[in-house]
Image (cartoon, rainbow, N blue to C red):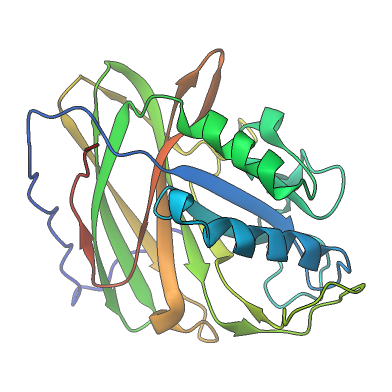
Length: 261
């Protein structure tokens, strides 16, 4: 939820741009995992994603967010954002860059790699920088966006938490699945009228920097030290707005604009 910032919290300034004229941005793909502790087949997808993220060729190229939308007694259940699973026809499922055409259930690792490769090949027309500050139960993110093409864009932020212990139903996948990471705790950027999660709309000129502040109020049961925030920008991809780039930032951290090598 969006809340007023405590007077004791100073909004963090954006980090300096290491290359102000550069518009060739580093790219990342958002992986949205739809899961739940009551889903006995979900460990198959959890293991697949673990295997995927261990591959050297994909390290640093993706950000993972786990939406627990399967069962209401799940301690990570997204009760305020169940509509995010509107394209889910079965559990477990994953979607890349919030593009419904990429929705898939437990593919082979080689197939999943190809799906990520296809999304990764979409040009990064937006770069993201951010600074965060935390105090008590408040976490504030100051994000900046620089684009290479004039136009309309959207920006959103999701609060994620790692290290959540909860019993996971399992129909026989080998491994320990009782500790849950990257669980989505809160979402800023849901549009009730559009019924989508593209984010807050803004217009930008090529090379200019748009700024947006996100203010999260943490539940007392959430552990701040285990929290981090996925900040993404949606851009026009064909006829749809899908995630064009994303970063993952932790409390009291700064991430400057990153450029392709």
